[in-house]
Image 1 (cartoon, rainbow, N blue to C red):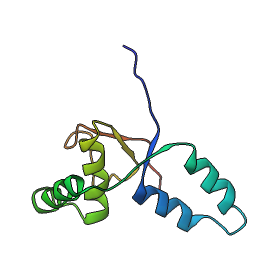
Image 2: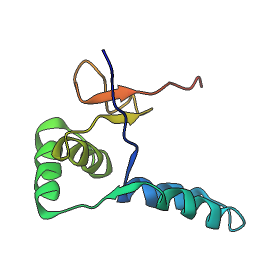
Image 3: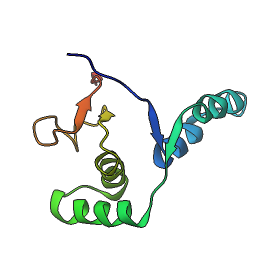
Image 4: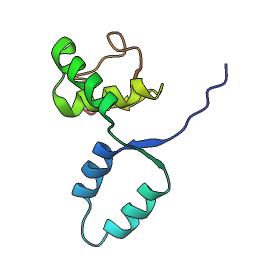
Amino acid sequence: MTYLWRTTWSVITRAEVLAGASDEDEPAVRSLLDSFDCLDITPAVADLAALLCRTGRLRQPDAFQAALALAHGLHLVTRNTKCFSERSHPFVSISHTLSS
């Protein structure tokens, strides 16, 4: 089976990555982010995120990430095993986990 991967950032991920960049690295990080599609939060995505908050017990940032993936038919790749599991969320792929 062949899988096609398309790297796409959400506006949430963009903000998180830029917030973690140093002043020195920020231009290079912004350039990298600009080379990929960026998914915006639309009213339909916001409505889906609200539903996921109410029914899936997700906090808003996680619900927005999930809603963006679902609305665009994409897989959400994350390390967030606290909120997402591949068993409970079939659209999620756990990229890797970190040891504490």
